[in-house]
Image 1 (cartoon, rainbow, N blue to C red):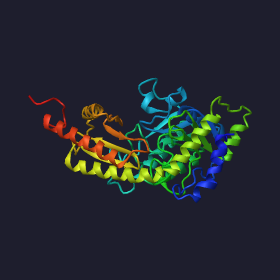
Image 2: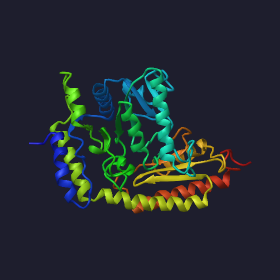
Image 3: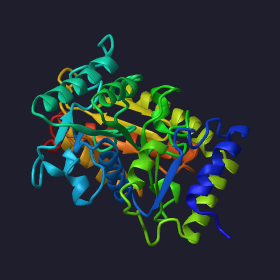
Image 4: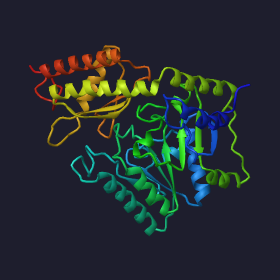
Length: 377
């Protein structure tokens, strides 16, 4: 008989720390309760319910340009979506994206982690002055739609302090970046410090390698507050025997094929190759990432860092002609995002970068500058 997903996850901390491939427990001891679902949107919606029930508060702090799912409740906390739809609700408070390349505190700032966390504190304070009460801070551990952002180390612990003092909880959205993708750690939030553990963590996508399975992990205190309502959480297909079998198979492959270590080595190699291209092509403004989560920020001008939106779209189209599928992210839609399957190889990396080099070289020969894609007469 297949184990229910909570049983699987409960078992993992006892087994994985003894295995050299995944040196950190998959579920830190703080996460004593797990709930089974089918999708990212269900997971984040449930996390929102948990936070509100536990804190007795309603408001949410999110990062600018964030995206957390397609349900109405999640559109409301996703600036990437609500700015083009019904606008910002009064209970949603938006903090600056911790972007050290384009944001207000950049790579030359002495302590960008504290500076960006202070912006969250300011947002919380402004909300409290209006009589609002904070239930949660929601963030992808590595903001993706925002432009493949790598928050400065120490940012999350600082933010968590501000949020918890305001009576809220910290929710880490690991939907895209969990399960070893970052290479150095099994969870992307661990990049923020070994001692940092969110109050609620949401998982999906990679937990089932495409199969519709998701999970919410949280503390005993949060779970008990939710249970005290007397209204059970029920999901018809969440944690079905098939889904559990898929989840177990994924974990087996991650371990047996050493995919976390693979992500670290291949990602480092890919970053090195892309760095070599940066020296050759001035349109490559910033190359950032960890493991197999990498962003290439295309710019029109080095001084202003103006997003090269049209150029990025052109590059993606040309890559597609070469059977390489990439897309763009970021507020300027100018960041090429590299999030390949975990089996992505060194040869794959060489091939992609070689095609990118050829396309950029061809583009530079045909256009006057990086400011336009109009062909020379």
